[in-house]
Length: 371
Image (cartoon, rainbow, N blue to C red; front, side, top):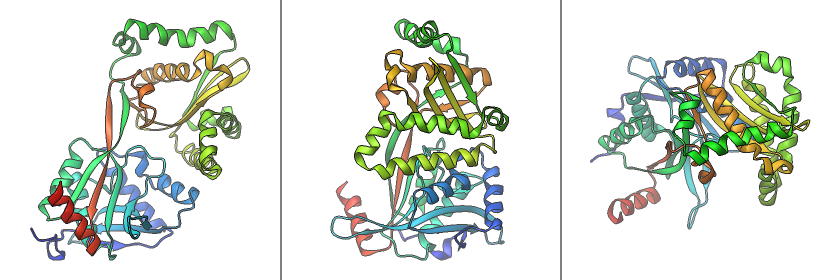
């Protein structure tokens, strides 16, 4: 089957300037709001925080996709970089997904337009690349299958594989019904997590901040100082320090910037668990339209016998049921622990499209004939 050709392209690709101008931002926001299932991880604010905080040195490529009438149909933000290969570096056009859970490949009103945009990007990026790599893709229902089918119909060879599994809570019922679905032993443990703390510490307090007014009353600088102080003393921070101290600093700066950006938007969701006159656990999440994405959390190791991590999760679930949140995404790490709380999960995916270099053609041939 011949490769998708420029004559068949339904969308014209135009590269915009970086840093982004206000016109690009306005266009992105308009398309984002038109999506059936937008993802907070495709907001420009989130993408730009990652680029800035991780000191990204790659070439940033902002694209617009137009139809034959000149109407804007889709947009995407990618990075061009060299990645280690077996014998020589690979030239890769890839998504921007720092600390994201699941992303949408491009912003567009529907799946078919996303597919057309990816087809057009494959043939019109203006660069000779070995791969186009789309990481942490949301399955979008059957949307990802539709995109890969469209790529195949266009003669564009691609592969998909599971990137990771992400447990979820679908909050359709109530806290009582959630408990009823657990085993008797687990129900007792869940209740005991909070009751044990309350029995031992009369000042036990659970606080959840989401509305900008919540932060105005509590104090933005105060809550960030509390969170970062506890995170610095957590086992997660110790693990990052053991690998590379700079990673810890990047992560902290990333979430400080995330907080400053998303608090005014009413989308930063912070939970605090206090007892014994100290912060014993926190969770920092993003929330858009009732979809909560859990991102960063830690507990005070001095109170490990009281299971503060489990206690704060129990409080968050109860509160989210009361708020009528729709989904809590648990993230893709520490699955054994997370699957004690929920049997539901979804996957994120890695979509790889093979480029137009000799190396890519050889890799494509081996994948087709040796798989």
